[in-house]
Length: 121
Image 1: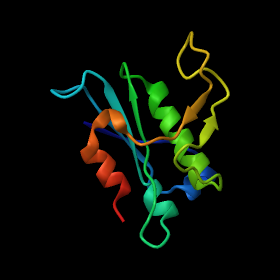
Image 2: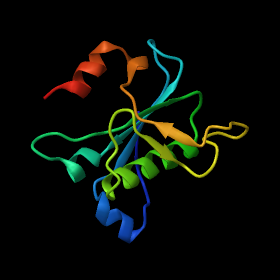
Image 3: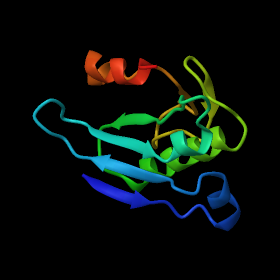
Image 4: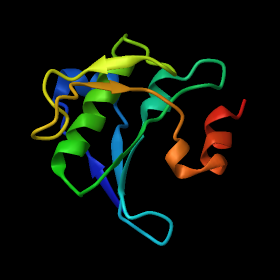
């Protein structure tokens, strides 16, 4: 696992000051890379509830770290995301794709244990 501090620039950094992206390589349970925000919860927490985001991708790529930083800034900057919301990203998420929006859903690919963590009060 690698912890990446995202360079959002000074104005954006104020919106989500503790943002990090955790990059988790393939392991015994998955052949995919996982990108996880850390710091959104602290920036948006209300009554003990907040969100972090997980994205699974086929490869290790700076593009996915940048997308996670974009999601974090969008969410913490006033466009509160929640389950079943979509977010425009302005271009395909990977070269050759037509997908230019991201969908916020439960992390079903990671199994019910992570779903339970996501839903805990």
